[in-house]
Image (cartoon, rainbow, N blue to C red; front, top):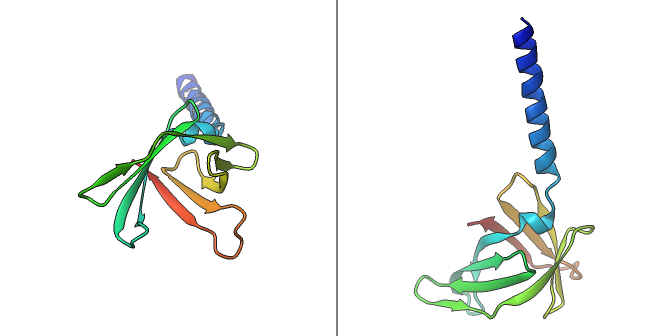
Length: 125
C-alpha cells in the first residue's frame, strides 16, 4: 500500500514538473526551427513558403513551386515576448503571433492593418 501511494505521488510530481517546464517556453524558443506555409505567389501560382528561424536572431525565407526554389538572403528578426510579436527588422513589419507551447503551428496576423490584415498559419516542418 505504501509503495502504491509513493508511486502515485511520484507520478503526479513528474507530470507536474513536465507541464510546468512546457508552459514556461517562450516564443523565442518556440519559433526556432523550420516552418512552412502553402499560399500563392505574386502571380497567383501555388507555392510553399519555408522560413527557418535560428537562435542568433536571423532567418532565411524561401519559396518553391515544386520545380523552382527561390531563397532570399538571411535577415534579422526580433521577438517581443511581452506582446507575442515577431518583428522583421529590415522591413519593419510586425506580426502578432498566436501559438501554444505544445503545438506545431503559429498563426501570424499583420499588426497595424485592422481592416485587411495578412494572416499566415505556419506549420512546423
